[in-house]
Image 1 (tube, rainbow, N blue to C red):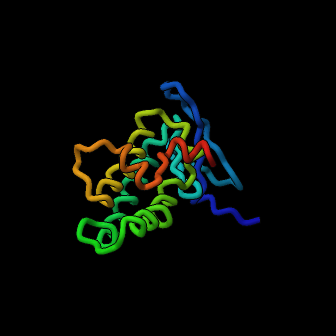
Image 2: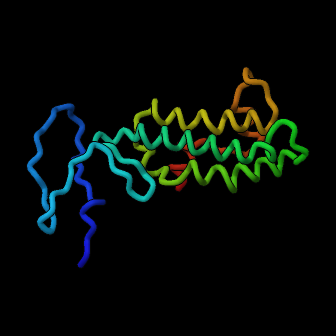
Length: 153
């Protein structure tokens, strides 16, 4: 069996803030490094399971995808609202919802950051003013927020 120990990492998941000195961990006579955060199947897991880095990564990637789709879903697009919402549901939302049942266990302040993104996008799609309540546009777009969608999965 061939294992690439250069790519292998060790992590301890814990809630407390104590710094524990770790013994060296060896696999096939090669030392494996201890880390505070690992990336597994595009999910960033930190040692306290706050998912802060993963949510930050989601925000950055999601906004880059929105910027690519902006000519189609933006203010000056000639597409109908139905098509714009369809683009959101079929292309953009699955990226945001990847592994949602796992990172849904994060603290509410971090989950709130993921709920703000689609609300801003729906305002862009519907050409709504920034001060308008988002619930009205969520219903208009038949959109469910990430908490409801994660529970449904």
